[in-house]
Image (cartoon, rainbow, N blue to C red):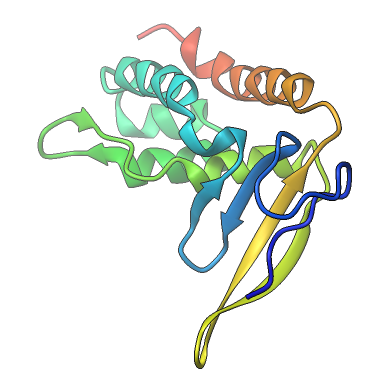
Length: 147
């Protein structure tokens, strides 16, 4: 089985330069710094909970297209509650604005394969800060809206 190889340190597998290894077919981050993005999930959940107090037609005005997709995946209209099931596609869309990824196909067993999108950076901490800022900017309009 083929392994990830870092373009910065040439290590095989997951290293400190890996921001995210994204399983394109499974739509989930399987490795890297972004894998456990609880702080980003909490930040988005707080804004979405604020938006549950606004009519749906107003929500569409306040959210970017990528956040609106996440909203519709997360909002339970019957309960009036928010539960973010899968934040990963949104985070990868945002990360793609900052870092050029590599796409690799991997054989995962006899007759099966998957595609990974790999995001490496020589300064991952700086890139994570930029990602947080990009998400904050994306959320800012909705967060500062009046109910």
